[in-house]
Length: 314
Ligand SMILES: Cc1ncc(COP(=O)(O)O)c(C=O)c1O
Image (tube, rainbow, N blue to C red; front, side):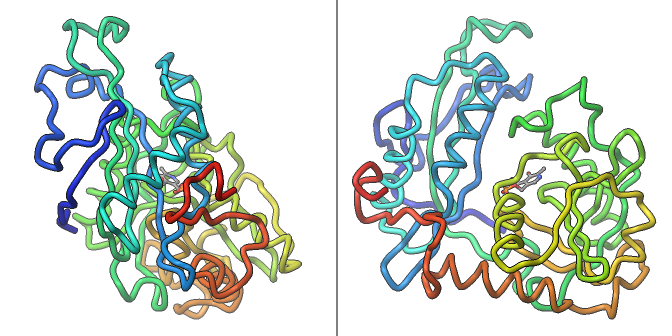
C-alpha cells in the first residue's frame, strides 16, 4: 500500500512539511533499530473523526520507550493532544496515526545514550491491511518456520522497530509461499501471534487466545476483544495453544489495529471450520465496527473526537 503524503508531520514540538521529515543515514535507529512506535486508527464517525483508544496507544508508546531507557519529554495527555492536532492539521476524516520515538544522530556505536531522542507523529490515509475482501471472506495463512523471539531476548511487549525484523521474516516467507500472512509459534512450540496481529480461536463457542507470556505484543485490539467478549457473554480464556488446535478450531481470527478483526479461512491449506467467516467472528466484528463508526454507543469511552482538544474531550 503506497503512502499518500499529507501536509504536515509533527517533530519535537513543531509542525514541519511532510517532505522535510528526514533523518541522517547515520542516525542510531538506522543501524540498530532503536525506535519505538504506535499504529493508531482514526475512524470517520457521524459525529466527526474519532481516534480509537488513543490513550492506551500513547501509554504503550511511553512503556515501550521506558523499557528501552528512552526519556520522552511529554506527558500522556500531551502526546494525546498532539495526536489529535496532527489529524486536525491534516484535515483527515479517517486515517492511520503513527507516533515514532527514535534514537537520532549523535555518536556511532551500539551505546544509544549519546544519541538524542527524536519524536515524530504523522498521519495518512489507510485502507484494509490484508485487502478489502479479507474482513468478510477471510485469508489463507500458514504457520511460519520462524519463531517469535524468546522472552529473554527482545521484549515482545515493547512495540520496538527491531522486533519487526522478526515480523518481516514471518511475512516474507508466508508471501513467498503464496499465503497472505504467517502465524509464529513461541519458543515452546505453542501458538504466539501473526507478524503484525494477535490471534484468537473459537472452539465450542468459547474463545481462546495466547497469554502475554507467549511472546506476543499486548495488543490493544486484543484487549478490546476481551472486553467485548465480556459484554456479549462469550466465554474467553487466555491459555497456551498447541499448534494443532489451529486446525481443529471452529473459527480463527486475527485482531489488530491494522487488520481490525479478520477471519482465517485456511491455515497450512487446511480449511478452518467451514472455510468462511464464522458466527462468533461476525458477531465480534459487528460490535467492533458499530462502536468505531459511532453507530453504537461508545460505552467504554474508547473514542476520542479529533475536533476538540483531548483534555477537554475526555
Ligand atoms: C506483532 C504485533 N502483534 C499484535 C499487534 C496488534 O496490536 P494492536 O491491536 O495494539 O494494534 C500488532 C500491531 O501493532 C503487532 O505489530
